[in-house]
Amino acid sequence: MDVELVNIYKTFGRVHANDGISLKVKSGTIQGILGENGAGKSTLMKILSGFIQADSGDILLDGSKVVIQSPADSVKLGIGMLHQDPQDFPPMKVIDNLIIGSPVGLFPNRKKIIKQFEELQKQFNFAISPDTYVDTLTVGERQQLEILRLLWLGAEVLILDEPTTGISASQKALLFETIRKLAAQGKAILFVSHKLDEIETLCSQVAVFRQGKNVGSMVPPYSTEHLVEMMFGKTIARSEKTCDTQDQINFEIDKLKIDDRRLVIKDVSFQIRRGEVIGLAGMEGSGQAMILRALAGIIRPTGGHIYMMDGKPDGRVDLAGKHYFQFRNLGISFLPAARLEEGLVQGLSLAEHFALAEKQEGFLIDREEVEKLSQQRISDFNIRGTPESRIEELSGGNQQRAELALMRNPLRLLLLEHPTRGLDIESSMYIWTKLKQRCAEGASILFISSDLDEVVHYSDRILVFFGGRVSPAFDASLVTIDQLGQLIGGKGWS
Image 1 (cartoon, rainbow, N blue to C red):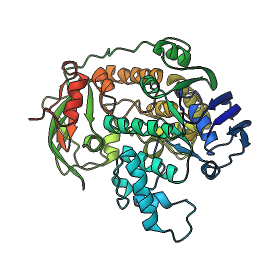
Image 2: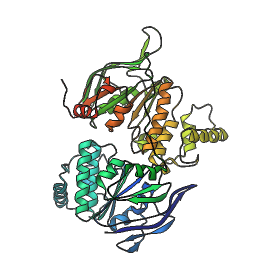
Image 3: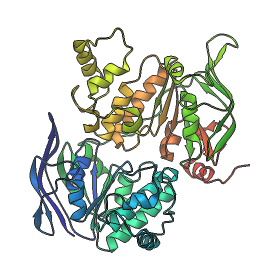
């Protein structure tokens, strides 16, 4: 099925998300859509998939104009979208997630549907049990489930919005293999990304968006420098790590133990110095997220100690077992990867977020003061939006900047899950510039990232996680990405 979008316009208040964008994708093509955060990529895809409606413009399928007013309309027309965050029901079984919302009636033939599901899986070398619960699946497996569901519903056009965010290297390789098979079957694929290497590896052509416009296209062989210039209107040089770790110990983790129904981590011991950045690397579900949440006071360890040094000789306070609010009041901040689910509140504006994040004095909010604060934070963190902008209307990069802008001062420890997840090159560099400012002020940072290059580049030391085991912290400057990848895969452990 050929897809054509003609002069699509969409505004959110004063922000022009799509400013006369036109794009044509033929069946059997893997069309890359590249652009910085806030360039209008996701907005255009949500218009095509019926989640939002354009202010003006036309959508044509095989040359015929169509009207798409809901996701149900798009599915009926053969268009399916794989979102950046899985759109499923974690407490339910895989087979129920497949069936829900499909036109199979009140009494579906489950045996027949399971057989169809298994046959689809064989085409793509997937191995998901239809009777398992979705909340036990990895992000990559949840993506696979959504792809299978869209194909089972008859999708001929597949939109993939930043699909490699938060998945492992092996899952990414399987995803790319799947995308190539779908294109070979005649499906039209729209692959949205800000990652140049993915576009260059996978796509047969690419359109570049900037500030709501389609500013140009390219076919292989690609020029990375030219693509970057088209994305940002300038060349981008990667920032270097400039903070120096201080000798003073900020925190000491001693024989920490965490029990989970699927994983047990024990005897984790390491120190965190002031101004230090420690990267946590490992396959998803290897325990690094549990450690981060334990250090934030969100989950309680079943053994060991979390000591915060109070600056006196041998002076320390054990935080293990204390309430999350005590951690927060001592300057420990946690920024989760699931921005809209855990870090921010959908339906609230930027101004309301800033008001809620500040220490409250009295029962009434000073609207003028909140407006002034909001404008200052929006300017300081380069957020593309207004105080009235609802948080869900912002791009992923702007949501991430908003999360950083909510942090209180002073900070002792900053805990980050995928701090540059879904962000373009310039936004990622900007985020790390802000984080390095915190380090220069004496804060320590622990962060999780599936991007091994990011882990090696920005970390002073690295902890590797594998099946509940945790390596000693080692110097990031002494390890290569290949060596790190082997440790993550279970090789080289004594």
